[in-house]
Length: 464
Image (cartoon, rainbow, N blue to C red; front, side, top):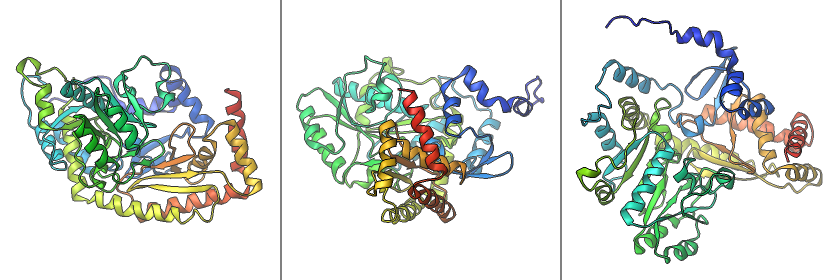
């Protein structure tokens, strides 16, 4: 091959314009993003990343306990995934011809199905919300029914179909009309059965552990729900976009409940290796055969970039790393250590109410203190806007301890930890030490943390 000819130089462009990052976003993309980041002091200039860490221009490291909302399951720039992508680019494959059957999608489907032996087929798309859209369409077509049930407070994506099964009004407001779907409380079998009796339910879609608030389905719920659904000839869709691929200490979170065999399973996020977006919908044979019932229907559902070679190579590399480095077992072991150490602090801090979750998906919930002085401050925050105390914890974790976390949802006093599955004792110690320092300050009743809290209160009141 001849050397590339042209004027484009990525390194030079970043060197010349990288410092304009927040101005460019504010001017051309989402004007509220830079405003929000500057308000809470998150407007950092990260220069590079590796594993579980970011690095700024001074070389200071930042521990990533967010992993890009779960996308970076292997950490950032894993060498095996990088090599796979270099290899597939260098191979110059005849990709996306539309009139052949390339090997990589079949190989990735084969590897994924090993972990769900009751399923036989896979449809590849480009994201979690597309994986959910596929499941919704397939369930409706296969059953001939229009309605899909979902759980209150669920999050399944933001495209029109997946938004219809989104349990948070803050995402749904202003985008109606949506599809005819109905919410039921997570864990409420009576509510599920009442809806199923109406005879028009295609499926129930459920996150085994909800991302919003980190609420786990009660033990036995998924198995009992599955039995009800089968009795009424409806399907079970497991949304494993965030919980799957080892996050909770098993390959899929639904596997924590014995005997559960969903009809459709959605995965995405960490299957990408953090590089090339990929989504996958795994399903039973009869469902796929009904959707793709004849040659006339061969492209009745498709994705323009689905099954592209780069995404498939990344997915194959991710599955190999999960197995070779035993990351599912590491998520179980490290997650238990982190959760236990945080839970042990509950008796020490009256505003720390509960630590919950599985594997490396952990929710830290705060609540109303009992002592008079702290109760007054807590009430001040709650009167302005629920969720401000959790934000008060997230900010010093980043600004003073260089640890990136997130509040688990709008108006929730919950911090969610979803770090890369590669973390170990070093990262557990660093987080627990920093969290303890932040909670010490919060319970002292004064200092910079509560000064910041008053700033948040003023802003919340001004936006009403």
